[in-house]
Length: 199
Image (cartoon, rainbow, N blue to C red; front, side):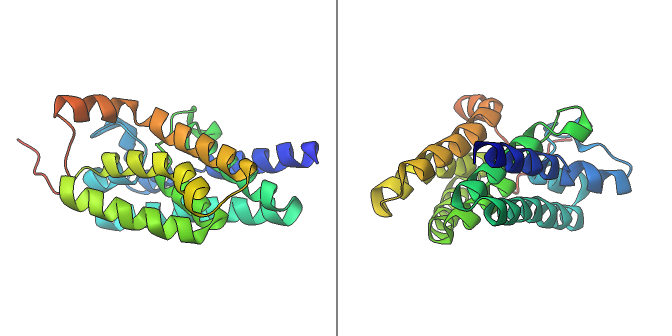
């Protein structure tokens, strides 16, 4: 069992390492890590390359999380879903194929949360929309929803300890990757959704 868990995590990591922002950027001959926030994720792709590119990134980031979880579930079961999902997120954040410089993994994390429990995913999506609508900080919505994931699972759905541990790992990964956003939010310099850049 332990060997299979490690195997599906590696498979998830390899799938997750296919960073959608960087792959889409190649068609535009642009490395999004050299523009905007420097992050290889959907939000920076949207600001740098536009809506069409961002849509492709959304599809790619969600798809690799879903595929990882499906393979993990098929090979190992519920633990496999969570293990492969964590692997995919780690791969997105530190991609093997792109010098270990990836994104923050929120879309991939969301797809993994869907596969773990779609009810919790829908609740978190609703909370995210409200937070972003009020504050216009995408990063703040991502950070708070990540932190709420294990709490909601334990408090309202009586999830197993394994589920809580894996959801806590997902939350920690997301929050750690947002450490610079947290600093900018506290300083009041974080970019807001829809804000015009000064020329």
